[in-house]
Length: 310
View 1: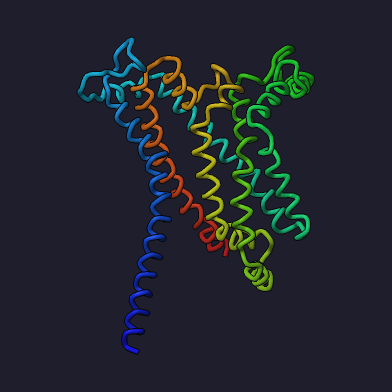
View 2 (view 1 turned 60 degrees about the vertical axis):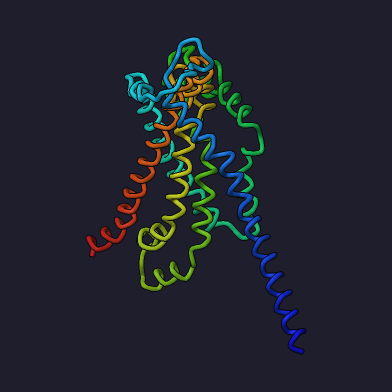
């Protein structure tokens, strides 16, 4: 009897080790893929950013040893600073516009639509993603061109001069950014509103709170995680976008993604482009932390406002 028990314990221990080994392998595989396709390229770019630039070599990379910070000094040239500032302004303005448009849409779908219609409205939100990104941008180029329908309407209203279009302007870039990334803002806000218990709003109504008071005191603060998730993702994607500024803005709508692309493939200056890429990552991290701090302050505004009107 004792031997049977010992064998059973041995098999149990062996099975536990196999299960633990299998679980470790399952967890290890994603980390290896992450290291191969994310960490390794970032390390490579970091090494290139510290490599001296040599004219005429492959990508401007020096075959000799030695490290330099000259590439980072070039990042702060007047041209790059101007393009970088325009990129951050466009990304921030586009993110705020996506929030102002996306929150009412998400709120309407979540609170005003029946359960039967909600999936169909969500399909309409993500429907643009079913077509090619490039194809959608080419469609906007036609509409915003000098002979396009939108430009024709603005010309008839004397908001544009005859023969003038919105294409290749900062307004066209901003419009393209908002159009492309608006669904990315709507979806996390919708999920956040869906998770909000209706009991909170019903309790607010039972306490004779007005609808705007319920929204400011209950709905808006509790959906803050969805707002910050949407703002963060949209801001990061807009800042590094390349296709929209290239197709909608041209030389007048250049953003940092376009500038990095030109340094990599046209200027053949890989060290400078790598330094620009890492500088962009650093600035985005700082900007996201700043947005989180500002968002935390804004989250407390409804409470402060409610106390002020008592």
